[in-house]
Length: 219
Image (cartoon, rainbow, N blue to C red; front, side, top):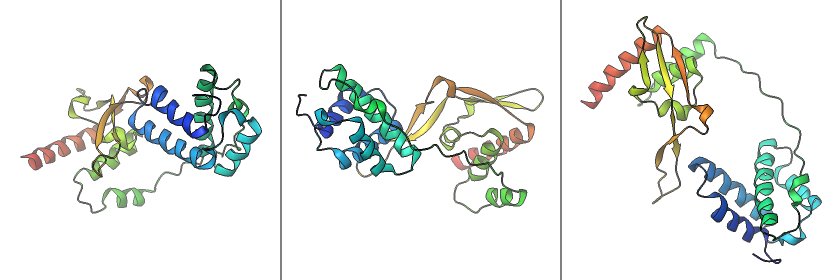
């Protein structure tokens, strides 16, 4: 990389040499998508000509008031250009002064009514596990990727009929291979994601019924 290196050239170099082997599959997809947006907007600009004002203007044009998109782009730019400074491609990091749009207020959580919840669990579907997934999500607050990665060995039954479920992995969608995206079992995103959650007796009973249904389906 030299003084004429463009934003596009540097981002490709940075991702291939500094990040691609250190991040999870779903994070990699997010990085690639964000890098693609940056390159489409200003890929032909030389790194040496970048200033905080230029980057701020491009950021505003790319994201308007979309906070999360601006946050992702800013994170990528700060990391990539910090590396450019470390490798003496540029003198200072022009992304260090980037400002994000106002952060939106968190949306208030409105739980479903009893009738809405029943309609959801009773929905006709070819997925035999659908109702169990909904009940587990409602009781534990687990993410979809965490629920779908659960195995029976993660479940412990207590003498009083309650249970404990251990969250140690997730399912993620991999990169496209032969026009298909493989499903990959991975660890949790961070160590804090590994946790154990209590389950009430009625959920344990439902799980036993679900296990028996699964045995019959699998022969």
